[in-house]
Amino acid sequence: MKKPASYQFCGGTDHPFSPNRRDFLSVGALSGLGLGMTLGELLTSEAHAAGEDWKDVAKPSKPGKAKNIIQIHLPGGSAHQETFDPKYLAPQEYRGPLGTVDTTIPGEKFSQYFPQMAKVANKMTVIRSLTHSEAAHARGTHNMMTGIRPSPAVVFPGMGCVVSHEFGPRNNLPPYVAIPSQTGNGGTGWMSSAYGPFSLGSDPGSSSFNVRDLALAKGIDAQRFEKRRSMRSIVDAHFSGLEKADALAGMDAFYSRAYAMVSAPKARDAFDLNKEPAKVRDRYGRTSAGGRFLMARRLVEAGVRMVTTTYGGWDMHGNIAGSIKRQAPSLDQAFAALISDLDERGMLDETLVMITSEFSRTPKINTSAGRDHWPKVMSVVMAGGGMKRGYIHGTSDPTGSEPDENPVGVPDWAATVWTLMGIDPQRRLAGPGNRPMPINYDGEVIKDALA
Image 1 (cartoon, rainbow, N blue to C red):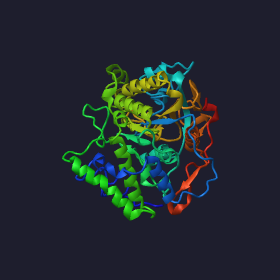
Image 2: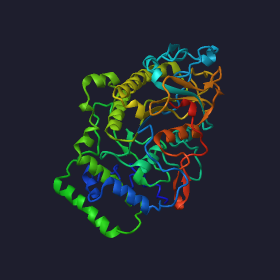
Image 3: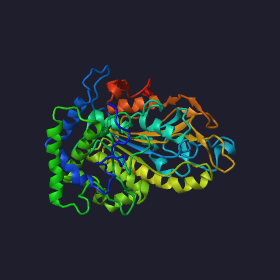
Image 4: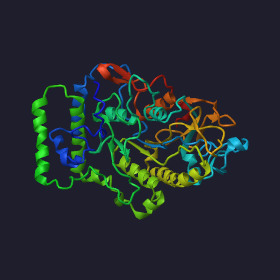
């Protein structure tokens, strides 16, 4: 069922019940609309209302090796040469200004500002041959948040929305959370807004961090809260037995999940970084990257199925050496801590952790000592969740211009993610006009990279 463009979950402020409408109520204040129905029942009823009872040719989804996903997106386009595929044997104009560091994978190197990640490379797979043709930021981001090349005819849903649709919530927590907010094309696209991300609304790496939707809004007393809670019965009376409009279904799911979190101490605690020992916070780093990645670990540990987060700005058209020096150390520390922490907790084998970006940067350093947009070859990091440990898949050519061995398309990468999650890449879901819409186009699983 096609929805009005303005009714984006955690999105448009013109939605009368949007969480961005600060003049109304916080989500916590309105979440009582979820009374009288469990989250699982709610999602099931919405699926039937949306006409999703037609037969699917693919296998039904069931949890796979990866029970959880953490996707770390580096907005702007991170250079493979200055991160995970340094061209240290190439001429200077290709090699760039940085040195290298040896990794725990014999014979393999990372760029010089990733010494901590180099130490845990034996727990990771690095795909050095991902390729696509989208050199614009928005289109490249769409690729890596949906797994599908953008189309002028339809906006595809983010991967987290599909995960939310297929598996639903666990432990009174949303199935899909965005830190600090929805990333580019990580929204619902043609799917119901009920499956969109719960956005934290602020940066966990900030000293003033607070999740806006886990408490009553200022000035809202218990009486008003109870009044809003009673609105659920009115909604049921008017819409019982009828197909709900997408905006209403999305609002219903949003408040139900919010009320579940407000009323469940363990769910609220998942968002509280102060529950972590000081030494753990120091291990990740008291930075934007450290706070976001630690929050991601807490959320998947508590029951969230997919977390997307961003870090930094990697659109380095000039002075790439200085920009990388400022950006990389926090990423290096926080990601290495995340991988080690998950492994020590026995969670890495069931948690797929990924570093993605919309594209990479040009083979040659430009006249501004930077690199420009380049989608022909890029690197993606994947760890845990059924991926091999200590593995490099594919290569770029000696100048870092294009794939040399084992090229991987975005659909292949996405098909691998879906398979690890237990979702058949051939699966189709009810799209606009109740037409079957694929979640992947002709992708082949990267079998050599699987454990």
